[in-house]
Image 1: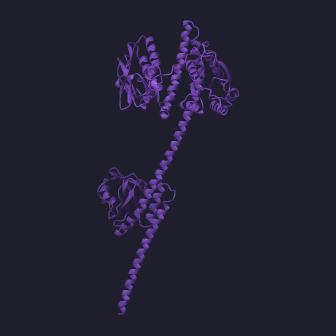
Image 2: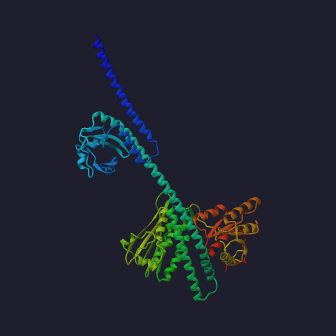
Image 3: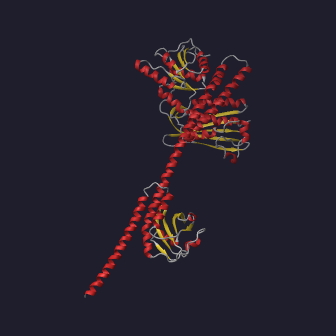
Length: 579
């Protein structure tokens, strides 16, 4: 009886030791997993995290090669391994590998037995046992593969252990993916900031170049325009016209480059204001009708009744599109005719689509050449560029403008027979009776009292010549501070304010004038920003500072005088005259 009790005690003790050993092993496994998971909180690179996970596995079970396979399309790809040569190896999905990835761990006595290994290029299995366990990868369910040189190296218990430890691999893969995503986000943010800084630098450069080019250009075009108003013999008149035309061409090229930059940066805004289509387009049409006549071309124009009346949109950009289409038609047509047809048709409850069709009998172009039609800085072939000139930006800009206004530019052409371009945009009819205020009488304006703030001596002389045409009484200031010292409410009818000046700039001076008027309770004196800073944000800044209008350099004498008279509320007299 006593012997029986001893035997039972020994069995019980042995069983308790087995349980203790199993618990100790389980605790060790849990410690491995917890330590591994804790290590994932560090800042290691993804490769370092995976190496740490492999080291943790190696402390629990022996292996000669460890692989992590992740799904990619119809394959499994090795994305990490203890042997770098194995990374990139590829196996077909399906069969044994897919069953393990979507199921439970498996132990194989010979790694060469799974059929997938025979279809893997560049990586042969070790001639020994292996364990295959499922893991969660960023692209879906993958595999953890442990291989040994020794056949039958692993037992079912080893498979269960690796299955539990695969949680560590799954968490490591997830953390590595988070690290990669965080790094990608950081790089993307760095690139975004660099792109923003580059865009801002480009904008500053373009603004500065615009200012520097417009300042001397102002002396060319404005003086040529005023010279054309004097008594000239035919030869002098021709030379003056050539100077003025060349200056305007240079200004158009400058505007094209600036518009293109604004469109690329997404900074070009489309206005939404009432305008009368036919009268607004008339100056553009008349200009190119005259150009066509000088080349001996017949010019036809038709504006249908449906296209007559007032609409809401950006008349400046509409004129820009039409001017480009007509310019190309006249430029590329040596004989025959140029035709313009403008029509409108409903395209919704309130919207109307305006279509401007320009047809010519010019050189035309082929379907192959048309593929380059809207490419930047290109024309349909190099010979046309050499023969006719131009930046090759006109159609690109015009199409972008048309699309910003809900339309497009389409075309058809036959080489040697001519081309047809259709520029369409969407708008709606303006409310009201359509009556426009009468234009001021340019020949009946009494002498104006004008304060001119301009630091450039040449520009001061140019403005002086323009103001002499209306016999204005002019006071000059060479910077914003002198303008503030000279300004007093009721002393001046209008202020012409340059924006970029020393001591005090024009924006600051304009804001100070408005504060002075408000403090004195005085009437608002019209202020016209007269500046080579002509980009959209410059105009907005001038208006925000208190300017009533912005006239860009190079100055058009007619536009400046008309702007002044539109803003000055004075009773005209018969003494003044425009030269």
